[in-house]
Length: 289
Image (cartoon, rainbow, N blue to C red; front, side, top):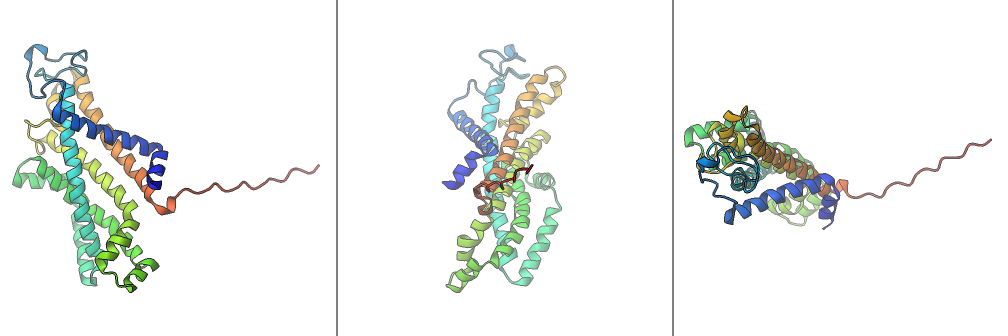
């Protein structure tokens, strides 16, 4: 509860929670209701201006943009959550191998991580798409693998640092196994660093899905996606610029909210950044006449 209180006390934390919760709630609502069918084409209402009942207007096919954004939020949540899970599992596994095993294994894992870090996430996604074809699964796995390596690279030295702490040595002396020490002592103490990396992974997943869908490597055109919507509307930006603004704003706010939430979680969860009582002011002696 103290961590949650510190998180809510931060403006960035409140903003990040609000944005993340809004995207999740909209995605859940879109499962059962949207103002219009996102795939319904209405040629008579092409390029309608924002007004009732099309509060954000319509696109070149007469589809309701608000409904498309709501349905696209589902894709965003699935990709962000899936990539976060893959990055977490891979990052923790590589960090543990690189910190808790024999020297030759640690050095081999460190070299492997350094090699994989050299490949940008989007390049990895495009390489996988070239083999397996474009889909949301490709985006999730490519972003998860690409950022899982980054998580491992940042978490590994933190694990090595905590590994030599007194409480870890005491746990080992009391008979705790390596896995028990990892779950009870090591991971909780590197959680602040890990949480920030995970939030960045989810933010990158949102950007990667939008970018890959824009390039044709992500979500199929039949599935609502903010990236697909941008790709469809960018050809008309000079004539109907407002239609491109809405998916762009949705992507920007989501990525910004996830990044700020990660920073706030790091500050709230880090035990070294706990609430401190302000130091008393040193009295200033008066001027003697």
